[in-house]
Length: 422
Image (spheres, rainbow, N blue to C red):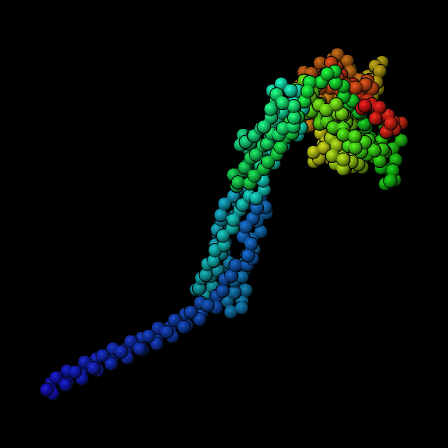
């Protein structure tokens, strides 16, 4: 009996001893945990900034992290691994690591590079006039995306044109880029009766513009006060005239499309006073105010083409690169330089102007002067039209390389302009 009680007592002592050891070890672990955790918690690393989404091609600016130990700034000890390429859509990770007093902490930032910019669809002509019974011919379109570049092949075209029924129709162009951004453009197509008579269109030829309200002065006969020019644009607008793009006029000349009876082509020669951002900048704002189209025949070697670009209402074509020199040829009336330079020199000059304008739709002879050689050069380099003077309306029966225009001077009043186009 005594032996059993001794065994029980011994077991109780062992159990109590084990329990005491567990308590002691737990306490030591807790103390150790407290000490380690307390030291570790003094090393802090925190992301700065909240917005981690960037648009493609946007400059990436790292917002950084805040690293401290007991209030001490450890920014200089932070190491960053990973890169962000904003030229490529995707998710990027940046790891920030700081080490101090045998302690280490790492934190990760995710950066999204996205594309939210829709593509842009440009149409060769926003309006097309088609003679009833004739097939609709696509004038051309292009789709450019800021990330995917040329996506013209992805454009979906939807047309409700009925060539056999007079009326207004639409052709719709839709495209999505790789980020599912959508662009859409619409061309109006007018199916009209065949003209009963040979249509003629006035081509007006301006040169320089000045604003007397700003104290500007221009004493040349071919100068146009901007308020006078605006009165022309207003009259066209108020009386239902269509100011043509060069593409529309070209297609009309080649019999591809029809145009409203009230149509006019506005042209501007040279690129001097008031036509660009560097020399007065009155032409483009006036065109945009009245949503009127015009074509500038630029002497490309004299002025930087970028001074005239950026408006959907002004097209730029060639007035030679460096052949606009009056009196250059002895014994030749209005002796423009291209009349007496050798053939290859003229061709090379024209090719240079084409390279700059990136267009061969139309050319304008300097000083309205031309001969057989210069016309041949213009044809050979690929121009589709060429303009001169003549002070009469143009028709499809005219030679496409000597299309007549009305030279406009400061002497012409609004009544004169009305007479030219009517």
